[in-house]
Length: 208
Image (tube, rainbow, N blue to C red):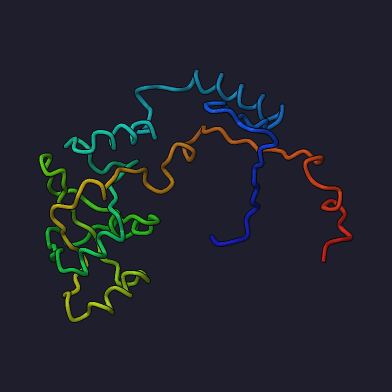
């Protein structure tokens, strides 16, 4: 949802020393709630029932050629959207008919600057992947690219690109499955003390 959002800018009132840790005081109520959460969480946390966390995602990206990495209920591989656009426009990707339809590649195609993809081949020596991705003709950028290259590429829903450099691929959590979305994750409002705002801001008669 696109809507106005509050914006806070933190300004240091003194020089910050190298390697100095800067902490933000969220208030006593937040601190107490956090301490209570730590106590409760440690009792409930179970290795057997734990889902893949962001720490696991980090480990996967550090060992990106591990063949055991694949799609799960929590994570997926994604490829650079602009890189795939460039390669498709250049004619380096070919139509792929390895499956009829994959709703995951279609429904999850809005991941910011990345496109969900499926790894169908790896080359550790060259540090490349063969990937399959969905070309969404309704996406504004893809539609623009399609119009530019209408005579150069033959449209297909799915394409396969071989030898994609590993730099353009990473593993990430699926939408809504990151750690902060998990049941039991810590949530508590951060209260802003009144004295942080100028008095003129508090005078509603100044509101236009």
